[in-house]
Image (cartoon, rainbow, N blue to C red):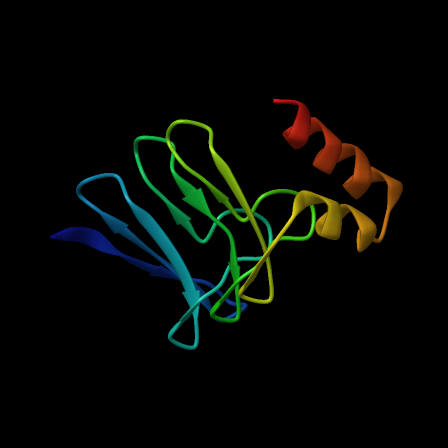
Length: 102
């Protein structure tokens, strides 16, 4: 797979964009992005990663191109109910329920 290039940011993160439309965000050599998916593909597949671990606290950590969802916390697959119980704010709970409803 060839790529267009990598852009580096002041916070230590970087994004590599490939010619197939794939984007990969990382920090210190590990997949990482705090405000969005660390991996996204042109077909809509998205994955959320923090410090090299598949992780998302306000929705599914993996959403494939068909809309199927997988929920992960600290690299461990969990249920949406587990993520809901650990939500820190009401806003996160509402966002989780919106994902479950779709």
